[in-house]
Length: 239
Ligand code: ADP
Ligand code: MG
Image (cartoon, rainbow, N blue to C red):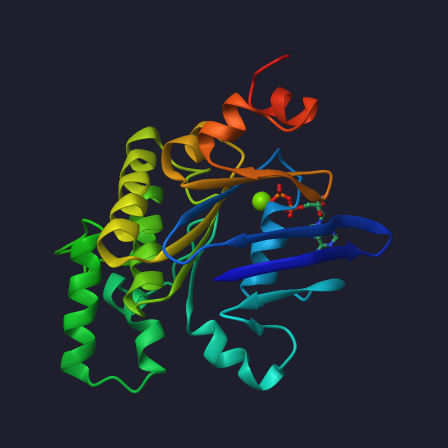
């Protein structure tokens, strides 16, 4: 569903991504794992159209997403994005979740119903009238997740969604990732510096190192048959 074709990204003289190639299949959970500074956020930002590759192409359903500026809006509407730092607007929880729906010309009662369902899904039923900024980090991240999911995206992109959260909230978000994928069939791409999270959640993992995928495979493959010394070291197997 998502094809990364020799994707490179330079910032000035610095090469962050040096030809990332791989694909994400429809309906799978794909983890981008790699050490801090490996380029995980950069890669997700390219997929989310927040930045453009220096070279190479990203195709979704066969369409080069950066080639045609006129299609940006329709491509972005296929994707939900959750960032590392829980990002909420200074309004109510309901308003935060409804943001993406207003642009779609949904009616009032339709919006209300969709927002309620989304909040219910993330375990925040009854939180609609609370000010989003008064919630805990984990709750804010679940508001962000509800906002991403209420538009029923084909792809959910999550950049280190649990990096700043307490263990209980981490478990909640992880559980949601699995349920969203299983129950709604949403294709999910998330990044993490925590290889065990990749192992717990993902159907397949791409190990981002030195600007490329050093290995793409199932957690079992990556953890038992690391493709290189560097991958072995990162997943904690010295051999
Ligand atoms: P990760 O998410 O894996 O920790 P990032 O994608 O955030 O890594 O960053 C990878 C490298 O790219 C880092 O060295 C970072 O400093 C650099 N970088 C990221 N964004 C920019 C930018 N807008 N300008 C310059 N350098 C950047
Ligand atoms: Mg990052």
